[in-house]
Length: 108
Image (cartoon, rainbow, N blue to C red):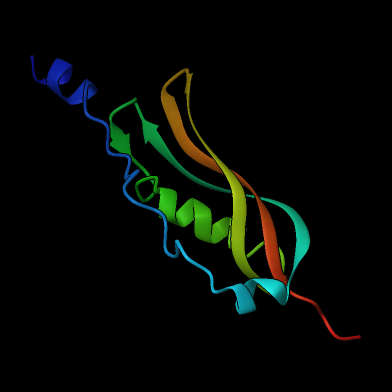
């Protein structure tokens, strides 16, 4: 009975991920498109129940995407996906973020 109860648990931390909802027009004018980015946050569960890594988190996936291109200030056109892969003896749950990075133009 306890196995059935535990197998229904989802320890993902989807939570709120929006750190900024407004950008002043003067701030937006100085930003340039840096390119597409993606970020992930994954957790493996041994025997489908015992977590090995930290819990999956939307905020971690967003922060991971922001770090892909140096100078990223904001992400736009964000798509957030949740996957669950079940293999023999373990499972892996991931949150994947795809977005467009905007930041300050680099001076050369």
